[in-house]
Image (tube, rainbow, N blue to C red; front, side, top):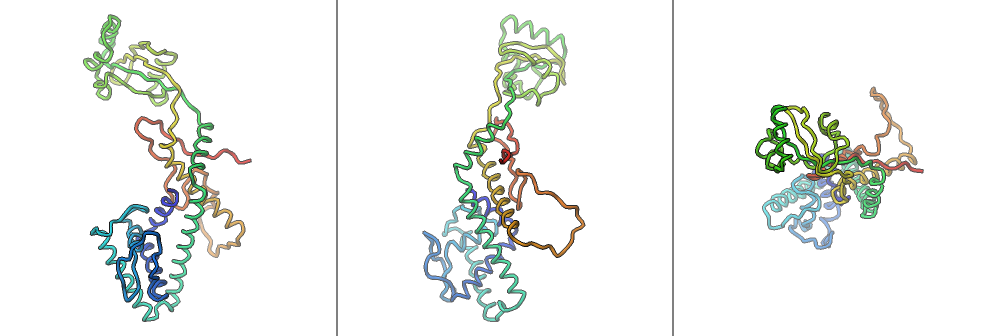
Length: 329
């Protein structure tokens, strides 16, 4: 999964970058006599031949991913129109690369630099994939999830229902009906002016008071399950609130948090790898920048353009805070 995320990001650098990589691979294949007749990947299938050189289904899928037509790891049916269209493009690339070799364009200094840059990018991507796939596994995901649970502060949640009416007099009249045994849900549907909750029997669901207007915070402080609170003034009138339940805020589940954790661990590994490589290498910048120097990004900031760690939680789940590592000893 982590390798898929990394490769998906790296390929988002642009279609032209993907085409450059494909062209470099084509030149390399042409330079070796048109490509190997042995399947480069398990289950690969030969889908075309250009001057004796084989084009494999994996070549076509790689090109489709590079152009953003499919995601990394997604299937591409060799009988589909999309596969045939991309295959035609790969054939064209092979023909162009072969002709370039015949014209000895690969010997040009500019071509040599571009081929070297493509080679560097491919090898760098493969190193990242290797490091991430080894480190970002289920044990690492579960370990960071457990670490986050220990660091997380859980607030108290309240489950409540409300009836909102226009005037204090109407609110008192509804309160008397409730005291006489009327159904809260039925009265909410009949009399409440709050369109968001009226047809759900006034149900507000579970919430923490910090996300509610201040009037709710003050009115519900100390209220116990089953207690009727109000009426009190709110925007749009006066509210009567029935407390259904109080509990500690429920943590996000492992499966809901998994994409966020995988993204965090992915660029965490890339950051550590780059820091190690820079620390043991001599890097000298030959140009100066007018921009003020910046410190390293925080542990939960994206690196190399990878997606942010914060992802929308599923409906009903509390929003997830950015992941942070516990301090290293």
